[in-house]
Length: 397
Image (cartoon, rainbow, N blue to C red; front, side, top):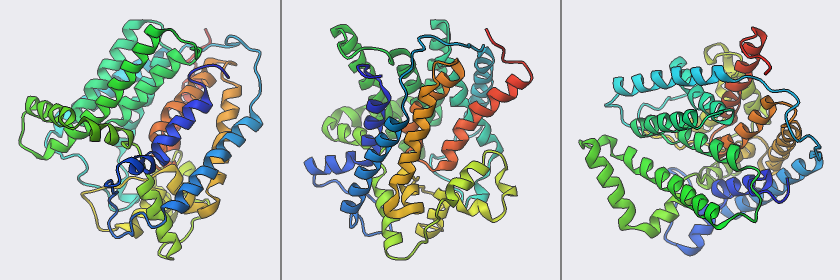
């Protein structure tokens, strides 16, 4: 593990920084920066939050290192044929593109669900699987043609829908799967291509964010592209800051801490995680009162219950605080142990290796959502694999 550029410790540190303290660092250099949290006291509890995040980061490392084992395996003991995931990706891509052309006038961020139960969307659940099937295809792809098709299709869907999550999952998956074992003493050419690749990813992240904000304007596709590029290149300094903070969730974390400290919201003591796990098996309409403990909506019902045209997302840290407050580090310790266990088995077969890469790639997204989304993303791969394995659609090579 050590000496490799994309080892799990480095990757998690990088992702954790983007989500949990990039804003605080940016604000040190740009004091004018402010986060927007309606009905909240802003950064009143920011110092407490930074301390929670520091202990949480150490707890993750502790959990990972304690259970990490040195492996002598240099190749898979067992390898499965994941060809079926390619066709599942193509199918869900077609469905996603059909949805785009049927809902061209829908403004991004509108029609937010009022509560967890009303957020149930069977087609949305299906489309959630799109990025997972694409990621699994990339990890196990044997030809460059398949890699190219997956990347282009995902980019097309991202641009047309104005969403970034699926494309970011795909890009992170590709980078980890192909560059995980690059040593730190890499060549200049490789370094240049890596920097260019990362720069393109950040550019695209900002471009899509600005592009989707123009959905409410009567502009043609070309006009939207010109508008987005014009804003990017006219103020490159603030754009870099915006890019650095595009995944940051310190605002919602502080908001949760404020509501708890001021006795406006009750701790859930692990119920949100139970709901997230149950949610992978039982659909929301059949969960009874438990559905109300989906973390993002439990928070929304207290913080901004009547808002339907704007969502403030959620985050892994915010949910950990919602459950354990100043003991939020417990969630990160468990995450570290879980990832360490998967990492130990990654070369036993390509199922575990795919699962490990998928989890790392998903962390960039799921640290900005609640556990229900995290478990749902993982379930698409895990349940699909075992279901198809049971019916012998997936076979050993």
